[in-house]
Amino acid sequence: MAGIITFRVILPSVGLGIHVEVTATWADGSEITEIDWDIVESGVVKTLPTLITVTNIGNQPVTLELASENLVGITINALTWNYDGTVLLPTDAVNVQLSLDAATLEPTFSFDVVITAVQQQT
Image 1: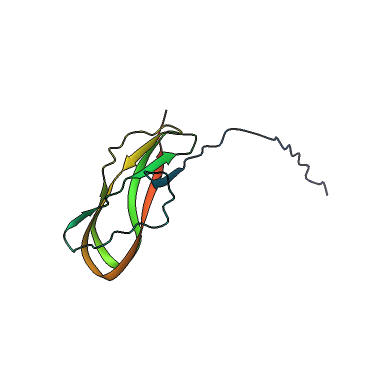
Image 2: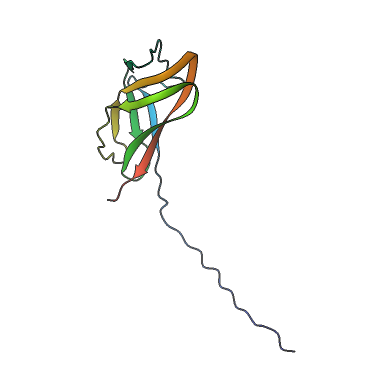
């Protein structure tokens, strides 16, 4: 009975990984540990008085997307910002201001604000 002969070659390969990431701080450069919306009324748009700086710390051009997650004690009509879709090159930063329109809310509520970097073609 004849055996099966196989031949295997391992070729090391290298390249530049695509790194898409953003970071956010308050406009004064301090770390954001929590966003305090203070008093929010149902059906009334509440705008944060403080700007948030979002910086592209990746190695690719990106645009930004905004979402909310993990809603507890709140239903959101809209979470918006004044970001206009400008492409951020690596190291570029943009100041944004968030606004919240809550449909329903309990006396205490919480949710996560999610800012996502989306790679753009160069």
